[in-house]
View 1 (tube, helix red, strand yellow):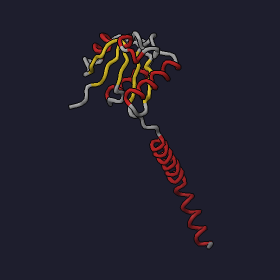
View 2: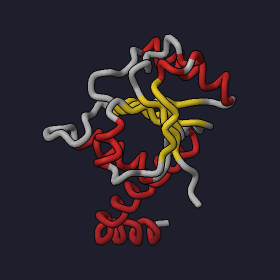
View 3: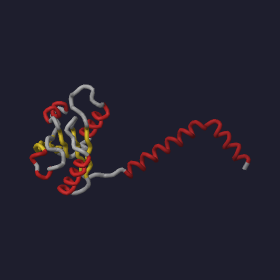
View 4: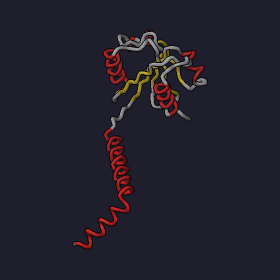
Length: 155
């Protein structure tokens, strides 16, 4: 038993930093995997891209309910509070929006300035459905002045 204690003490003396780093790395990996497994899965993602014309929380909840009734499944709504093409915008919000568009996360996009959106995204493939106020099923969802668009499926 004393021989084991001596070996452990010797190993700890020479390798404590790599052992501690290994334990921390293992903890980070396990935590990341557990969080990814427990992350909610949504059937539909909705992005609202507007600097000043976005719905209240009650309207967002109503929008989710309307989409869930119309298309089934669970919906998630993300608001990107940005004015596209303007200087001084929040880099984090712009990065998240870019990630969303690049990875085709959101199926439905509500866009305040459609022309500016198409300009800054180099005419990204979307189907423009119309203004929110043109759809009776979107009434009281706070998206009356936003353009409803859908992503064109990848070929």
